[in-house]
Amino acid sequence: MSLLLGGIDIGGTKCAAVLGITAGETVNILDKISFPTPATPNEALVQLGDALEQLLKRNPEGNLQAIGISCGGPLSSKDGLVLSPPNLPGWDCIDVLAPFRERFDVPVGLQNDANACALAEWKWGAGRGSQNMIFLTFGTGMGAGLILNGRLYAGANDMAGEVGHIRLAEDGPLGYGKQGSFEGFCSGGGIARLAFAMAEDWFSAGKSTILSTSKDQLRELTAKDVFEAAHAGDELAMLVIRKVSGQLGRGLAILIDILNPDTIVIGSIYERQESMLAPLVMEELKREALPISLGVCGIVPSGLMDHVGDAASLSVALHEFEQQRL
Picture (cartoon, rainbow, N blue to C red):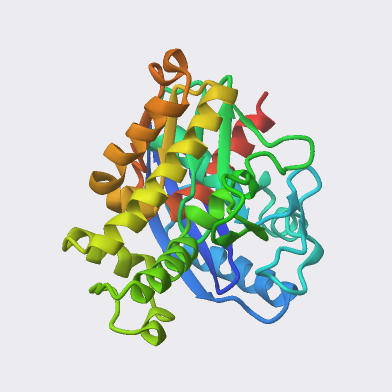
């Protein structure tokens, strides 16, 4: 059965409305409208409703069956409330479900962005067929979405999967408000901060690196710069990547030992840099994880790749549609 689904993505810098249709074990993105995030929640919700209505008029593919909303947390999926996310100032206890239910008269669901991506990869991506899957964002931040025993697991108050807050070392780059956290080592900003710290010692020892010619230039460093330098054979960059890979492996080992997943899907940076990261990550996993648990767990890059963001909100719509039919 094919379903016409609407997706709403609420982000700190941009918002988007997406229209898609399911086709077996895949989803086809029919159309999308995106725009900078408006100044107030009310403006954003009105514009998103207008955008979705415009998409439906442009694509008369059938009747809309459900709408899914993906947004950064904290939030309450049960009550449909966005609860003051750090990247959305002014979004304090905002009901995001009611405006769409009233306007479109279909089931509407809300999930945080990591859970939404997990649902998308589980339904249509690299996690298809899995019963126990973890999705890791590994981009701007490090978060997780959990599929356990064939169901989305969000926890007591939608805070399950905040793996970026786990401390992996007493000292290390800052991430998620904690030194040496999983997010500190394994996120775009964290990798740049780690490279900056390691380069300071490198320069003090009188060594050179193609990452930068001076400490001042290091302040503009990005994770992309570090990986490009590592691919070019720069010794310092390769040391940074080895450190990141080791901590990624350590974080994965904790998740594997506790949750015993059959699949871990990793997006963004891992997806683009799998050839460099995977062998180093596996070295650490073999040292740290229980062999019997590691042996049944596949670690794979995102199957939806650059489309995971669009598919995420649509997967929340599908999830809500299916929940309504139980």
